[in-house]
Length: 253
Ligand code: NDP
Ligand code: 8X3
Image (tube, rainbow, N blue to C red; front, side, top):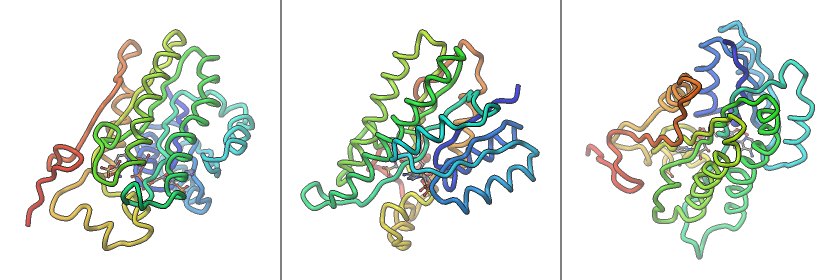
């Protein structure tokens, strides 16, 4: 059955790979992000390569009005969202709690927590109305273990963990699956964004071991959507083989 999948943060990293994975399987996609050019390019590529339908929606998940308007104004044929992947997110900075930039905290909390909530608040009623749906939240190992200077980023991902559990309970009687996928280190634009364009510092994060790829996460997200109607993966943690916790890595010299 062809499904409609809404993926936030599809202009890069996990979101882009998740879009490709579902497109390859013939599903129709609503892809979102702030960088319009990248969204349009991806939409064209997926339509041409996989002969599917794609609706690119350019908005900032931090902006309540933009989120509400984007979902309220969905064309009729796009209203039947089967799967919402709450993926858009970021880390900003890696600093001690007494030195970090407050603006970095605001960006992380507004995107990773409030953005995910806004999306869920406006998409979940559609699913409740249809008595079916699947919400997949991208958490992190940072939502399981706090690491030095991870403070607020970890806090946002612990929040995603709690919100995912709460969402599952609240939507239980509406036949809606709610899953959290919590990856470890994956080489995307994540560290480049965290270190504000410092490529050397970003590359160093992945030195000496093989990190996860965006495709690894896309495969995992896709897998949890292929299970029978009566089976839900509540929570799935995946890490590189060379990672055992947020601070333990086996790096080849
Ligand atoms: P990338 O930086 O590669 O991609 C992040 C995506 O989020 C981009 O498409 C970006 O699009 C979008 N985004 C960021 N802010 C906003 C916003 N305000 N409004 C709309 N879209 C936004 O990172 P990843 O793919 O690695 O990260 C995806 C998710 O996975 C995040 O939630 C991250 O916390 C989580 N994660 C990442 C891990 C990693 O090691 N890479 C590990 C565990 C979890 P645009 O800039 O166009 O708006
Ligand atoms: C991203 C993984 O360990 O850099 O969520 O926080 S980590």
